Length: 343
Image (cartoon, rainbow, N blue to C red):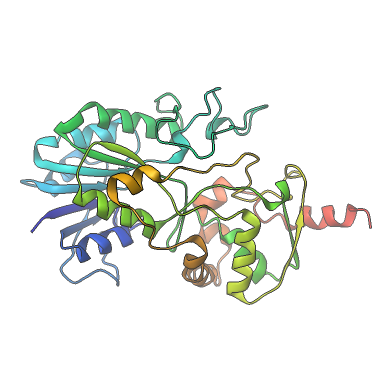
């Protein structure tokens, strides 16, 4: 039986990835910091506790060798070198990167969005040969590029499929963007404001779709870089309408023609220029077909968010989201903005 090791198995992508590989006939060792088992995994899945930064522990986990390593928590050149240093014991790898590595050709990317004239204008759609930011260790994006380049440098010595997802969604997310609408509905907010007329397109990636790509890449080892996204993404206003339908509520959406007014109108998808990725390479090379769309995935996401938020402050429940978007629920600013609007 083919043996796979999944690093970061307890996370949002790891849970469905372990399940997909196990059901596809792999003998799976699921490694995570907590070492826990999850209810949807088949009984034969083995679990191991792992500190990703412990070189000796990682080497012991790989043991005498495995056919596949899936690394969901690799950040930067050092993690890449950990894997390449074990290349003689690993048949192939699948490593998750990010669409944030892309640059628009004029030095603009995710890292420059807060700067004057820093909003990137990507081609629509973005193909995998689009220029990336320079590798480095200063930001999430530069570390991911460094990771990718270290892995690609070894070529067929460690055949690696690099996957670049967009706005990842689904249960167990540390950055659940859908909370923007779910919490407002739970709090009884009758209206919400969306910048750019609610037309922003920021390509979404269901964790289950990423898991499907991992399954397909595992069956066809190779050295490649692939976007890892859903079908064509819904606009942010469409996401809000679908969340409302799932929760059985009706809410008014007020649209701004331009950018957000401070925190008012700013959502986790609010980009002025579309970020849409080309998925034809994954379809061509792996036969990829999405297993779920963003609207289809929302009921389980909404249920998980509602349950997780129950009895907790949202910042305690989702600290990563709170750090990324500290003003996500600035209701006082919204109320003041509505009060100042012309009648």
